[in-house]
Length: 147
Image (tube, rainbow, N blue to C red):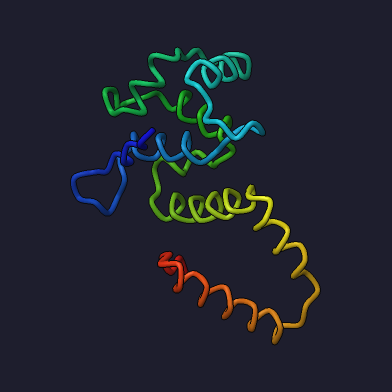
Protein backbone atom coordinates (compact mmCIF):
# COMPACT_ATOMS: atom_id res chain seq x y z
CA UNK A 1 0.00 0.00 0.00
CA UNK A 2 1.46 3.37 -1.02
CA UNK A 3 1.56 6.07 1.66
CA UNK A 4 0.02 9.45 0.94
CA UNK A 5 2.40 12.42 1.19
CA UNK A 6 2.04 14.56 4.29
CA UNK A 7 -0.22 17.61 3.75
CA UNK A 8 1.90 20.76 3.42
CA UNK A 9 1.08 24.41 3.73
CA UNK A 10 1.24 26.54 0.56
CA UNK A 11 4.40 28.29 1.80
CA UNK A 12 6.13 24.95 2.42
CA UNK A 13 8.02 26.29 5.48
CA UNK A 14 5.35 26.13 8.16
CA UNK A 15 3.26 23.02 8.07
CA UNK A 16 -0.49 23.23 8.33
CA UNK A 17 -2.39 21.94 11.32
CA UNK A 18 -3.48 19.00 9.15
CA UNK A 19 0.15 18.20 8.31
CA UNK A 20 1.14 18.24 11.97
CA UNK A 21 -1.76 16.02 13.01
CA UNK A 22 -1.03 13.67 10.11
CA UNK A 23 2.62 13.50 11.17
CA UNK A 24 1.63 12.56 14.72
CA UNK A 25 -0.64 9.77 13.47
CA UNK A 26 2.15 8.47 11.19
CA UNK A 27 4.89 8.68 13.82
CA UNK A 28 3.43 8.00 17.27
CA UNK A 29 2.42 4.35 17.38
CA UNK A 30 1.10 1.90 19.95
CA UNK A 31 3.16 -1.19 20.84
CA UNK A 32 1.57 -3.08 17.94
CA UNK A 33 3.39 -0.73 15.54
CA UNK A 34 0.21 -0.06 13.59
CA UNK A 35 -1.10 3.47 13.23
CA UNK A 36 -3.76 4.52 15.74
CA UNK A 37 -7.26 4.57 14.26
CA UNK A 38 -9.39 7.70 14.50
CA UNK A 39 -11.77 5.79 16.76
CA UNK A 40 -8.97 4.72 19.13
CA UNK A 41 -7.78 8.31 19.49
CA UNK A 42 -11.29 9.71 19.89
CA UNK A 43 -12.16 7.08 22.50
CA UNK A 44 -8.99 7.73 24.51
CA UNK A 45 -9.59 11.48 24.43
CA UNK A 46 -13.23 11.08 25.49
CA UNK A 47 -12.10 8.89 28.38
CA UNK A 48 -9.49 11.41 29.50
CA UNK A 49 -10.43 14.89 30.65
CA UNK A 50 -13.98 14.84 29.33
CA UNK A 51 -13.26 16.54 26.02
CA UNK A 52 -15.68 15.26 23.40
CA UNK A 53 -14.33 14.53 19.96
CA UNK A 54 -15.46 12.15 17.25
CA UNK A 55 -13.47 9.93 14.94
CA UNK A 56 -15.00 11.80 11.99
CA UNK A 57 -13.85 15.15 13.37
CA UNK A 58 -10.32 13.76 13.83
CA UNK A 59 -10.35 12.58 10.21
CA UNK A 60 -11.48 16.05 9.11
CA UNK A 61 -8.68 17.71 11.09
CA UNK A 62 -6.08 15.30 9.71
CA UNK A 63 -7.20 15.81 6.12
CA UNK A 64 -7.55 19.59 6.46
CA UNK A 65 -11.32 19.58 5.88
CA UNK A 66 -11.66 21.32 9.27
CA UNK A 67 -8.88 23.56 10.52
CA UNK A 68 -10.15 25.51 13.50
CA UNK A 69 -10.39 23.16 16.49
CA UNK A 70 -10.92 24.44 20.00
CA UNK A 71 -8.01 24.90 22.36
CA UNK A 72 -9.40 22.02 24.40
CA UNK A 73 -9.32 19.70 21.37
CA UNK A 74 -5.71 20.60 20.60
CA UNK A 75 -4.70 20.14 24.23
CA UNK A 76 -6.39 16.73 24.25
CA UNK A 77 -4.62 15.72 21.01
CA UNK A 78 -1.30 16.92 22.42
CA UNK A 79 -1.87 14.91 25.60
CA UNK A 80 -2.80 11.78 23.65
CA UNK A 81 0.25 11.94 21.38
CA UNK A 82 2.60 13.04 24.19
CA UNK A 83 3.61 16.38 22.71
CA UNK A 84 3.33 19.89 24.15
CA UNK A 85 0.30 21.92 22.98
CA UNK A 86 2.79 24.43 21.52
CA UNK A 87 3.53 21.78 18.87
CA UNK A 88 0.46 23.00 16.98
CA UNK A 89 1.28 26.74 17.23
CA UNK A 90 5.05 27.18 17.31
CA UNK A 91 7.12 25.92 14.40
CA UNK A 92 10.37 25.77 16.38
CA UNK A 93 8.66 23.62 19.03
CA UNK A 94 7.21 21.42 16.28
CA UNK A 95 10.64 21.01 14.67
CA UNK A 96 12.23 20.03 17.99
CA UNK A 97 9.43 17.58 18.84
CA UNK A 98 9.60 16.06 15.34
CA UNK A 99 13.33 15.42 15.79
CA UNK A 100 12.63 13.66 19.09
CA UNK A 101 9.83 11.63 17.50
CA UNK A 102 12.15 10.61 14.65
CA UNK A 103 14.67 9.33 17.18
CA UNK A 104 12.00 7.37 19.02
CA UNK A 105 10.76 5.91 15.74
CA UNK A 106 14.29 4.83 14.83
CA UNK A 107 14.73 3.20 18.23
CA UNK A 108 11.61 1.09 17.64
CA UNK A 109 13.71 -0.90 15.18
CA UNK A 110 15.27 -3.69 17.27
CA UNK A 111 18.52 -3.68 15.28
CA UNK A 112 18.99 0.07 15.68
CA UNK A 113 18.17 -0.17 19.38
CA UNK A 114 20.68 -3.02 19.83
CA UNK A 115 23.45 -1.01 18.17
CA UNK A 116 22.66 2.03 20.31
CA UNK A 117 22.64 -0.02 23.52
CA UNK A 118 25.87 -1.83 22.64
CA UNK A 119 27.59 1.51 21.90
CA UNK A 120 26.87 2.79 25.39
CA UNK A 121 30.07 3.22 27.38
CA UNK A 122 32.43 3.35 24.42
CA UNK A 123 34.99 6.15 24.27
CA UNK A 124 34.26 9.30 22.24
CA UNK A 125 37.02 8.27 19.81
CA UNK A 126 35.42 4.87 19.23
CA UNK A 127 31.92 6.38 18.93
CA UNK A 128 33.26 8.80 16.30
CA UNK A 129 34.75 5.90 14.31
CA UNK A 130 31.43 4.01 14.47
CA UNK A 131 29.54 7.14 13.40
CA UNK A 132 31.84 7.50 10.39
CA UNK A 133 31.26 3.85 9.44
CA UNK A 134 27.48 4.27 9.70
CA UNK A 135 27.59 7.45 7.60
CA UNK A 136 29.64 5.64 4.94
CA UNK A 137 27.18 2.70 4.98
CA UNK A 138 24.27 5.12 4.52
CA UNK A 139 26.09 6.72 1.60
CA UNK A 140 26.74 3.32 -0.02
CA UNK A 141 23.06 2.41 0.34
CA UNK A 142 21.92 5.76 -1.08
CA UNK A 143 20.22 6.87 2.14
CA UNK A 144 19.88 10.59 2.93
CA UNK A 145 22.19 12.39 5.34
CA UNK A 146 19.74 13.08 8.19
CA UNK A 147 22.05 15.23 10.26
